[in-house]
Length: 457
Image 1: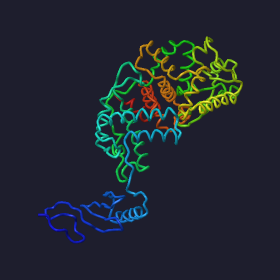
Image 2: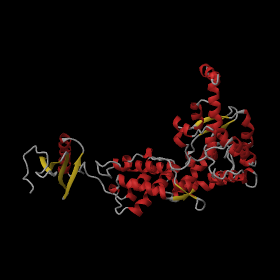
Image 3: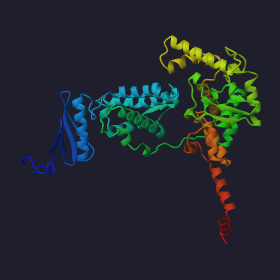
């Protein structure tokens, strides 16, 4: 038999030891209850009963009860209320925010969209409820298990060898979901006191199961790679390897970005092309005497246009559709195309960028996809089919220059990394570099050298 309700100050237990609600106080239209050691608020909002858990002590519960009472009496939304939305609505809203409000680069938005598509698919297949507030840490753990079982082709190709998602890929997907749910929480699309389920899950502690991928060519492979290049390929891949450029930075370089008198060139965003430098790290780089001939060959007397032309244009079988005498004239023409696209119904930056793209291709711009295809042709030819990303030449640059003792901060500046930690991730010292470092230490440290001499004596 359950005992009658006790006096004020009771701990909230029945005579049988069960936890029960104990009314503490009524503040306006809100009643403060205690169940065990946890406080709750009970009230009616627009004809509906609301019971909310409060994280904190009695003072916190009373303060929140006062705020809720004021909101209910004014007819305002309760500070404990939230707008329930589906997972699809949450993910779509976050992508629209990234694209339309923050104005992130289209490529970044595409990466977010691709990452969130995995959780969208998982939720559609495995969750009976499609509302975002029903996602718990247990759901996140099931999602990780599901991701580990999935297979996909490399780089999003429709056909080819299928492999499981890498640990870094799973981490990126989870961190993107975490950011999306944080965005939703700030806009009260999640219960106010509910923790972001992706924040509760320790993403950084996911252990790698796969073997680390080969990131850079060995010196022997590097030599074979450039010997296998034709003249057009050699110019492109030499540029990528010599500076550690991103492929997009090379394909968006213009003649006007190069200043031969000063022997420099600039990596800078091209908003008229709806392309930005990743991390917004624009930078100036040198044109050393060894590469001056390469730049002059690519410019070939032109005043403006893409520095590196697609093969058909570089070999003369095609000519750029327009000839421009200045950067200003080129950019003005791009703005005119964008304005025409807007007048014809283009709704956002992505649609405008698609309208501009045919003109850029007709001007001789190299598609980034083609650079990767050419890279893969060469790596297959030299017996390294596992190397499929021209981006690995960026890793090659970081590794080689730091093996030669170049200041890591200088390397960070050349690569355009936002942090030194990112530069470290791009550096993969080989065994020979490690052997030389140990040998140098043994040869230059007098105490160690003396100890080595005494070994065996």
